[in-house]
Length: 276
Length: 314
Image: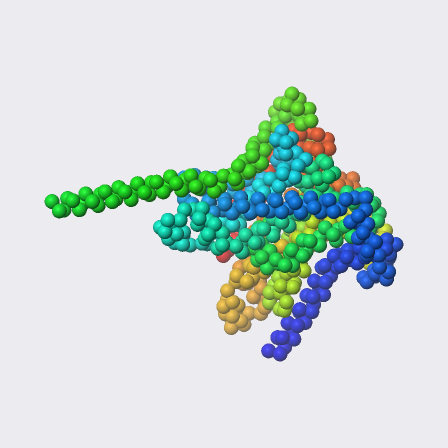
């Protein structure tokens, strides 16, 4: 028994080292963002900066010529709206596809399922034209609709609704509840963990999305954070300390959300086997 | 007399019940569609109609800035051009090479998952660590690695020189090494996802199989190859397919990291498509590429349907 525990400790230590090596790039990024520019690229690497330039770097990012705060607010706005809309739409559709019996349900579901195969890049050109005609081009609303149109949430939540027993719903109906009451009072509370998982995943994907803002936004005032850091990086060319400070600022909010909700994210990914 | 009354009553009740069921069916029908309507509307307008339009546009020569008057049907010309387009072939070839990322990442993930599952404390801690690149934006990751891979003064080449390699590769600046550099980053970002799925798969294997193998005296290595691997085959298959399909869709990383360069060495289909559509304004040509991409992905998915029955043992 003793030797089993010893070998387990040994493997844990070994894996710990491997894990640290794995996130070394992130540690380097954080460390570089604290340094004065001249010390960023020195070798051997100084993991703990000799002289600190943290305040100056981050001030430069947040109140320099590139309006980072504005991009941040834009990203928060788009992400929150898209996440909320996507949750409502997906939860409703998932309930409809799993708990309401109606003609054509299977056919509709197969249609929706089939759209999952379509790579987004295959429909960029028509989407672009349609957005121009509909007046959705260069607007946050357009981005929100695009992010909410994903069908993954419907699949994930449908799986969870399927595991809710039909007897619960039948008995509620005998008691005179209609589907809307059942959906809000019984269905949603029962799939809360799945809702939390999908909410966090949708948030992460929308926050990190670069392609949609790149193609469907033109005005600088509407830019999201991902476009913002790209622009910031182009603007500051070879100032790696500033670039890293910008990258840290972009990742940090997600990291916090992830660490708070890591159980939901990881379990959700494992159970629903979802992939962005 | 009594008999008939009762059966009449029964009949009436039955009719009432039938009516109620029919009424409920109608009511369910309306409700069902109302529940799925918002999602259906969005999918229809933003995915189904565009893919049909995309198929139509792929048979035209057109620049969408010119408006509908400039639309010119040319049949299969775009598809024929794709057959002779060097740039497209290079992008396709790079995509095929990039598929190698999937098995490499899966193998590493499997080893890590097996070790973490059986032999370590702090499982959650390791999950979080390996999952970090998955939640980070590709823009931030691309900027970070651009600096790490810096040919002269980047820390990676600093390290390589430090251990005695005098002329380390120039990575992203060298057409020979740029794709490999991109693939290293892709392994790094996909490892966590694969590992978490494998961990879930490992936890689904019943413990008593291992106990029985222990009793029979099978070594841990033998157990891994005779029990773990076959039991994980559905997981492996799922990861392989989603991984291959996913590798065709990598856009953000390429766009920020290399812009397809140097000399087109990291150009992939989706990036080449983006250039055709939004830089060169060849809407028809780009749409044809999109349809080819869709067919490629359908083909991979078809293999999944057929292969799942053949190669996966539960």
